[in-house]
Image 1 (tube, rainbow, N blue to C red):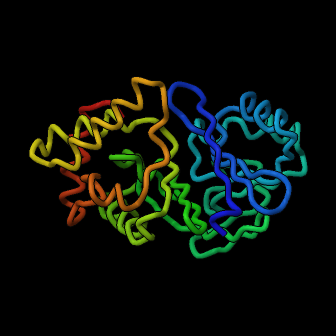
Image 2: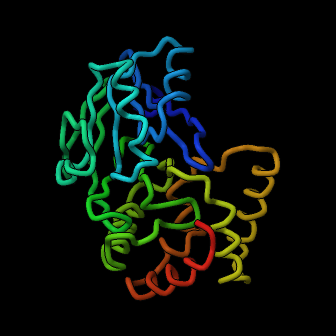
Length: 243
């Protein structure tokens, strides 16, 4: 399954990423299209037909491109949290945690990961996690609607995935996240080393995504938080920083 899966990354807006998933069957699946034009151009340049759009949550920088993509590919499915139909329009299939999706010859599992928003979901297939704004490389999403307890439980659910699972998070926040983490834990050699590697990538204009669950468990202070109260303290401190 790993070898048959290809994930491509399209940078859009200031720091968003849109992901394109390909499997053994023809076509493509797009995850969280913030805007349509660069995604449509990318697909058409490669002769790919859009089979489905996956949304992790309702924020406009994750769903804004869907209407225009559907104008080009009106047969594409739109899959999102069924509990959030009012805020994620155009859904053709509402899903919930524990659901399985069969797309492009691939099997994806839906996880409920509230915290950033009340009905945030993630999609997992062997070797890959599409987590929207729940887990970031070196960080986690702001608590716009959920509680520290919900976010802690969501992050622990993701931490239970295999260490080699690639983490496709939706924003290029990694350097800022790790600068903050290094300021919090200046003696942590793993965080310092990762920050240096990330800074080298960014100097060369390269993406820091994907991360991996193993790397996040070693260097992400939110994933390492022992309880919701520690996560709340960390999140409150980090709100003073960008991302």
